[in-house]
Length: 640
Image (cartoon, rainbow, N blue to C red; front, side, top):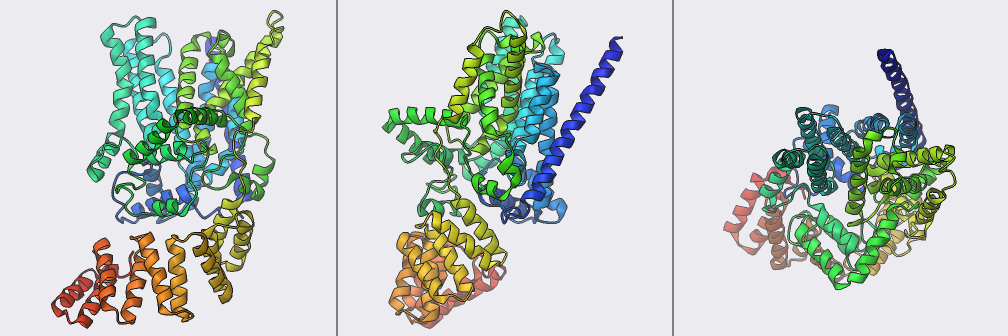
């Protein structure tokens, strides 16, 4: 009889799981057709572009940038293998890989959630995850968030499974080993999980001593096994960072700059990229790990902490503002502008299954799980440890995100947990309504209303569609669709009429369309708005030199300002040197070419031009040396 029941349950679960997978897959196919006409569908930007760039380099066997890993490396490793298998850069392969990960998240939400909350709440939670509006949106970009979510969920499920009641020590130790390995890979996907490691160790020690009556030695082993194995898994990344930079960086170096962005003097807690040309230059700096570079984590942590200690009241208020913002219904973009994307996609525009629904029920479930009614949420009374671990993970993750800054993408790894807690809370409400003694209690309903109010509070700054219009215009420009790109740049400037980069890009497009006056006007406007914007200075100088519409002093001054603003801007330095050489100013030209070869020692063209300048100055031995180096490094003629 028991075997029949088990077999019946298995078949039922298999059918529900298959239904969930099919629904999730159908949703992703629908979204792909719906959004595939967007200019950004096949054009990775910001973080997605960074991942794709590194994976392409790796797949081609090219040298990767030096220094520590700037971003967590696990997703790039997978993406590199995908590109290698596909014979080169393939965003389709990345989309398929992310989709498979997304289906895995849906399946695991159901299978693991069933053990804690029962079949029906787990199915409801998994269905919500399958149809969540931003799930396909993030999966169709070369972003690591789907891998982060799956590795976090696997780590959490294995750790909960390791502390299941009734296990002997040998069985528990084996499960703890797998949990530790999974936690390590989760940290390689996103280092926020490192904050959970001491919590997991403390829970292991607590359960071992109090519930299992282990000896101190065995309880300590239960605490340290997952911690030690997780650190062992990330050790290769740590050693790579140490050897490449001489600095101790556990996984990736972007934590410092992210901490400053979320806590600096001008931080609002939700903007992932501060405005200003100085940040744009810094982001494009080839020496990320140099002093003050984006990968100089200790520098940025120190600056962030300086801002915190300089105004502790503001820092505390900002922390609570970000905490409220984590549960807020508003979109917070960090790559593709979500509001803009909703205008491109019917799926995103009309799908009601959004964060505004997951957040209040999940938050109510989180609070209830901390109170005396926590047992009412569980289908299995013996799953109390699992719920405690679930809550500890959720709180740790939220604190880890709020310590930096909040975006919709950073909420995603907690979505399955929020969906399960929310479904468990709804199951609790249903049981309470059915219970004649409990149905008069209004506290859960008040809690839900309070959580809903917090979700709808106007905490998050309203977003505009500027970044969407700008990056879509850039995508069209790169594809050679100048007329269409011009339309989008015009829209972007209607939203932000003083954005120098948009004027620069629009000027380039107008030039390609034959509007010479418009190009000059936009280049001048870009320099007027941002006097230290090196790209705009270079473009304007090159245009004035090429057209002969200004005296040499003007374009030479612009070249000089460009290399002063960005000393590593080699194209501007080379153009400056060639302009000086053409005017017979050999001493000044030699200075620019010398600086170019100092900064790019293998740059053949700089050596050759420096040799010609030396030859014109009568410095023949030095000229011969530079000509020899130019031939020696001939494979990198115009590689900046």
